[in-house]
Amino acid sequence: AQSVAQPEDQVNVAEGNPLTVKCTYSVSGNPYLFWYVQYPNRGLQFLLKYITGDNLVKGSYGFEAEFNKSQTSFHLKKPSALVSDSALYFCAVRSDTGRRALTFGSGTRLQVQP
Amino acid sequence: NAGVTQTPKFQVLKTGQSMTLQCAQDMNHEYMSWYRQDPGMGLRLIHYSVGAGITDQGEVPNGYNVSRSTTEDFPLRLLSAAPSQTSVYFCASSYRRDREGFFGQGTRLTVV
Image (cartoon, rainbow over all chains, first blue to last red; front, side, top):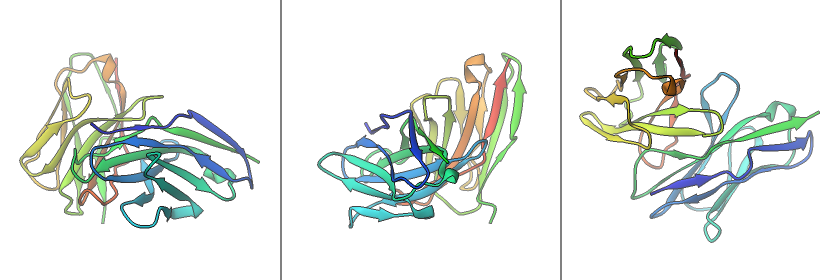
């Protein structure tokens, strides 16, 4: 079975400060990890992914994520938050051998204060 | 390219009614999935398909049926709607395991 945990329902950060949204996962086999963002009344938009290679991956809108195999984590980061980054963020996983549908975490709401 | 298209965008059903949520993609993706999104619970997998003629259950399949007769279409059928099925439904498709999923804009369903 595969699963994703996002331990924080909400993260609050001031504009200009760095942000981190946490994600840990569990899969059989090697993980393929994804981050998505959802703005109000919209579908999910892809931000970035880790498949293999460099543990630090860069994605859209200045976001990056660090894969840590020993801690089974894939935390989303951004050096300087913008008010427009306020949204709902989802971490998702599938493996190279298990079920081929994505499994999502429960989501983390990011609130960036001016 | 239209991407992933879901219809309708909004629907109100009475308890016991049936309906079909439509999902179509024009990217020739093999993988398609249906999720429901409820507050605080993220996206939960209802059913998925890895190609035409192949479907499988996700975590919350009860009360829903799917079929995949073509690569492009993956409709979700509610057999007898219940208030517990009030949710936002998303359809997604992807090319293969290591590729990101593309999502439709969602269907907001209310069962009264």
